[in-house]
Length: 260
Image 1 (cartoon, rainbow, N blue to C red):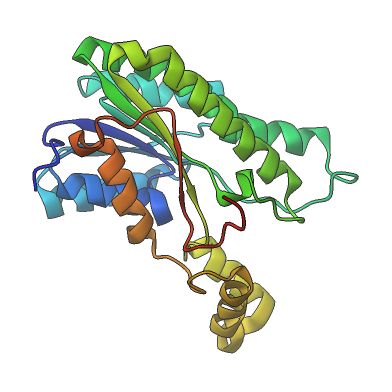
Image 2 (image 1 turned 180 degrees about the horizontal axis):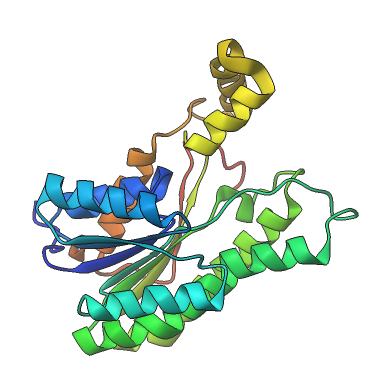
């Protein structure tokens, strides 16, 4: 099946590891060119080089902290140098751990900048590039926690909910420009961060049992998804096969969501 992605330039933030890297690989496998942005520039460059070699596409990695305006400007400029973006995957993000009573203003601001303002700034810079190409796709990686909050990460819950609303509003604004905007809300995904935390909590011998306990408590399929399983959905939404989809939020959570 031809997904119509050959030669498109896809920008993926947080693209050097986990879900972001799996999305980059999935798009490259379909012939898309790749721009990976990550705080760790060396890793981003190494992964981009590997992707270019493996899939025969153009791939570039850059160091950019998209929680800052300067980092977003770096991404926008790099995309322009490569001919302009066709696809933007706003994937950069991380979980939090706090109480509302104890969390500082600085922590709230950091997560707001990372999860919301990065999407705002990159849209301002990359949507005009898409318009010049006659259309494009913007996808936001939010979380099931945007609608089903976890008690220990109120900042993450709140900023991911805001990202969902931004996505819907942007979709309405650019629908006439042939630009589709959607949100994906994953559930449990076996990323390096989850493994690292589980090993810290349960040790090398007990971390797998700890992760299974988390999955059992979530219910549904009672397992973690691989990053590749989530990436497949992003690749589909990026493609011409999802041509009538915009302004929506999709849950890819193995049945964890407890509401309709």
